[in-house]
Image (cartoon, rainbow, N blue to C red):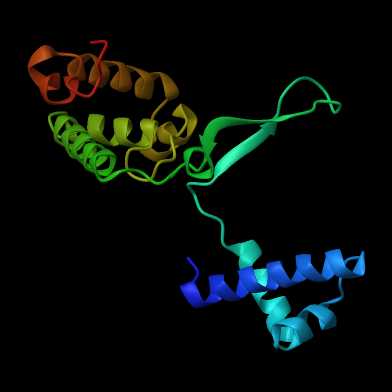
Amino acid sequence: RLPVSAIKKINDIRINERLLMTTMGRKPTDEEVAQKCNMTVEKVLFYRRKAMDATSLDKQLVGKAGKGSSASGIEANGKTIGSLVKDLSPTPSEIANKEMLQNDVRRLIRTLSPREQAVIRLRFGLDDGTPRTLDYISKKFNVGKDRIRKIEAKALLKLRQPYRNQSVKCYISDL
C-alpha cells in the first residue's frame, strides 16, 4: 500500500503528463513533467516506479472478448488478482494433521518387534524421508534380501490387524 500523499503526487504527475501531452501534441519528457509538477526528475521517476509496483489484489482482471488477436471490445471476467494468487504454505490444521499422523504412525510401529520396526522404518523412510532398497537393508542386517522381504511382509501383516491400526484408520477415507 502506498501512503495517501504518495498517491496524490502520482495522480498529479499523471494529470500533468496528460495536460502536457494535449498541449504539446507529443509525449512530454521527464524534465518537462518534473518542471510542471515542481519536482526533481528523480522524484518523478521514483513515483512512477512506486505506482507500477503497487497493485491492489482486488483489481479486476480484464481480457479481450472473442478469438485471436483481432478481438475487439473489453470484457471483465470477474476474476481479481487475489483470486489467482494461491498461498502454497500449509494451513495450521494441515500441519497439525500431519504431526498427529506421524505420531500415530510412530506409536503403531512401536507395536512391532525391534527388528521389524527397523526394517519398516528403513524400507519406507519413516525417519529421514528416504526409502531404502531391500539390498541396502539386507547389507545393513547381514542377511539375504529374501529374509528382509519376509520380515517386511510379516510386519505389514501385523500392522493390518484391526486392533493395531485403529489409530491411523481415521486418516484414510477409503478404508
